Length: 103
Image (cartoon, rainbow, N blue to C red; front, side):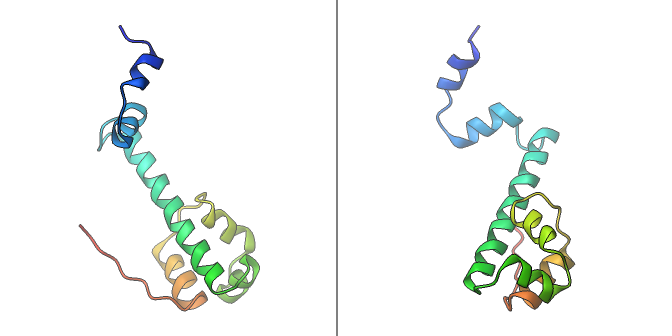
């Protein structure tokens, strides 16, 4: 039987690492990971767009009627953002246009 260290050395791709750590695609643990990863990615997009607009978190919060702490949680991937909030932050707050692609 392989030790954890030996097993980890046999992993060669990121997908293999994710499967080893969080389970196969579609498993509950993997779905939870994927949701958190997407929340983090959305937060990074908002942070980058805010910076491109030369706005602080506080300015964006004031413009959209939210709190700075809420903007911070979103940008750090620690808040489950609703579509209406995403729209308000990006389109109203930052003047960007949102488009979605479903694959």
